[in-house]
Image (cartoon, rainbow, N blue to C red):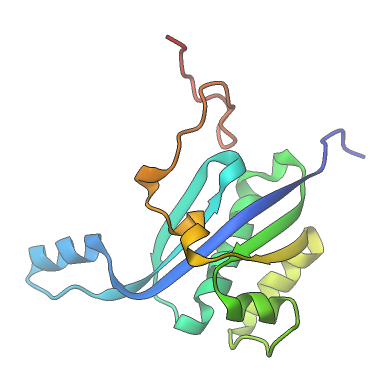
Length: 165
């Protein structure tokens, strides 16, 4: 048995479709092409000061599930030493929330995503939460987010090597 204390973690999920990436906008302008609309997925893990955003090409119905799998994969790969045993996935998408807790029909997502979420249920005690869009930190601009305090150990690569002045 490991000496690592088991802990819970809250992960906020957000997604948006039909928007244009600034990168696609700049690339399109440079190549004389029109920008390509895409989908943005983002998750935030406030306890670790982690905010992730990425552009993907995925059907609207799969965006939040894709975001959840991405966040769970990140936790598994980068935070495994933290002894996480419970993950609370908080979304502002009522369809995702209610289908996840069995109160509505399952979302129409690829079997690959369904299987990945099922697999993570065997690794973590996953619970679900619903939050209003305006209160979902995964939707907030990153410049409005606080920085990690100097004395916090960065979970991905040891110390952040900050010196106190």
